[in-house]
Amino acid sequence: MWVLVMGKKTNNTVSLARSEAPWVRRWRSLLHNPMAMIGLAIILFWALVALFADRIAPFDPLEQKIDQRLAAPSAEHFFGTDELGRDVFSRVVYGARISLPIGLIVIVFAMVVGSLIGASAGYIGGVYDLLIMRLADITLAFPSIVLALAIAAVLGPGLTNALIAMILVWWPEYARLMRGQVLSVKNNEYVTAAVVLGVPNWRILMRHILPNTFGPILVKASLDAGSAILNIAALSFIGLGAVPPTPEWGAMISTGRYKFYNWWMTTFPGLAMLSVVLGYNFFGDGVRDAFDPRTTSR
Image (cartoon, rainbow, N blue to C red; front, side, top):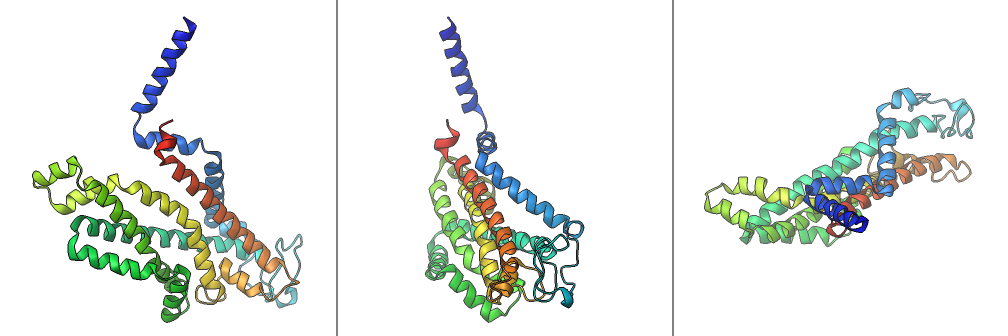
């Protein structure tokens, strides 16, 4: 009898799990993923650091004290000072206000622009689809960082120009992915029924197609966030991103790359960047597993 009861309980549990909405199963899978939660904790930590940077940083990140230049880490200056006597700890803290938002802005804009272009190309088809995909192919033919360097060099140094360069480089990846998703669902019955009922094309696209194809796009965005921060830092490292005296992590590493014996100038901004990128990668892996049917159907 106990075996039968346990069997019934197990079957009921499985039936209940299968009857849940897909987003509930995905959210539960994400919450039960320890690495994803570690990544989310790291992201939230740096978000709080950026939010309360003016209260955490003991010094003005732009304040110069020449008499304390290149001071080693100490009780007064936790991460030491740079070649102009600026407190490295304060600059790392304020750098979170730049690196985190810039990376997210790049991903959000590339995701939105690329998804809309790819969805319209896949749904409309014809010459428009051909032109958009050939443009995407031309862009993807070049390594992303090389093309971003070329665009940023033409536009000139600055975070805004670096952001524009990264968006121009990244949108084709989302466009091709979204186009493939739209092609896989646009002939489904519910789309055909909407067409027969005379629903406008833009409404079919926005209400019936995009909500059912956005999962892979969200997964890609969560995995690309760390790469966006690294690429922005790379542009700043070679002088095409943040300009002095902006406390951006890539620019800080570039400033200290010739100060071999003053290791703290590059070590602490590098560790901050490493932790953020790892956090996004851990969280992105968790989102990918949550959207994997083989994982959420268990």
